Image (cartoon, rainbow, N blue to C red; front, side, top):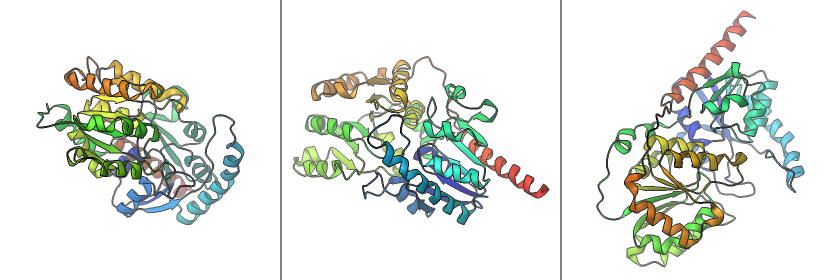
Length: 377
């Protein structure tokens, strides 16, 4: 089976890749650079290079929910993205195209439809991404992470798989969820803005960093956005700290997928956004968290995710506009003083730990159906 995977949400795509058969042939279509006009290599590109998976970079316009000054320029790039995708798929001829959301999925899946290549998509969010809503009109199967998404998609073609979680995270379940960590030395805070990083969160940490490092070890994933150069600036700041402070600050552009399990195991508190993947991993690992949801993303879904995590007992929420240094540090202090109380309470969760395997079987069944139809013609 030849499978073309489209970059979007990287974590579920990586979880899916862990299920493929050695006999399958894979290509990955995604963004070579983290941001448009920025020459920083994306995590999906570097990961596929490391895994020796053939990578095709695609340039296309972003989907716009509102009319802005970028609307026309973005729309003008879409035909080029479609022609690029058509060329890649004609050259490679995959059996199935598999998408994980995001604007890149639209031209690739439209090209797949033109070539009569079946499409399977995965929706990570609790609602429905704009790209997936468009593609769902002709997708063969729509795999959903949450029950709440069913109302947004054709029910006959939608299947609840759960969110796809990487093996290294699932394998941490016993270590993290069931064990009580006994501290020797300072408690550990892990700060992440997702695979691309978050400039806003990086600034909040920068403003509070020296005070935090006096009491805690901070593992900080900044992303590598060359517009803001957060990693470079924070590296320089770290170089000016005393040895005692500097050793408490572990700074990374990216946390590699194979290293994330170790980071989670070490961490007492997670600080970050609250997308679907973050939500799923925090629930699985029962990890205390301070969430700063993205305010303008996906109809406020990150805030809804954060409220859910707060209601089950795991999270405190801090709105970005309210994140002054004093408020931020004070909130961390309160959480650290009451860490034992930040545990899931009275909720029965089914996080579908076999979601990756289930989705792979769905893709395989779509391929076999197409192959059977060909043999009859």
